[in-house]
Image (tube, rainbow, N blue to C red; front, side, top):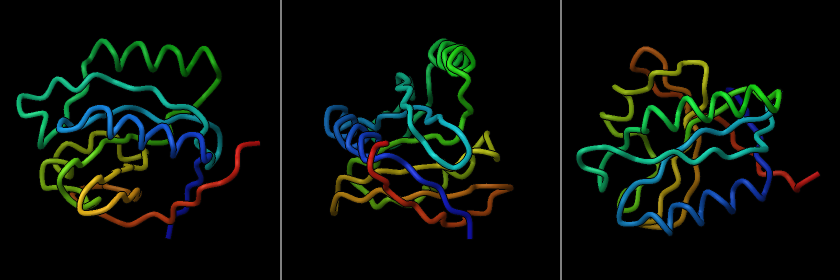
Length: 136
């Protein structure tokens, strides 16, 4: 089973973003080095039904990729929130998993606060071990 680490600061930021965006889903990129996520790149959710799906603004995606390159970071993950459902990929999440090399993070607010990570490749969902580490 794959493993990924994120700093506590990143985990806390994802929670703040999910709460601030509710009842809409928030989304963004996660970057860092190796298996450690250190940076968050929020993206605007421009989906037609933002309470139940996400679709990142293309201009934000391009700006985030440029910023990652400038900082020497790699795209490690993609995150979004589920304001009203469990932290498990929906059928739309699986269908739109356009980055098979990335780990997909879902932060749920209900029924309880929950952050989980998955690999989604060719329509298959695999849980990823998520470790929250103290900031270095």
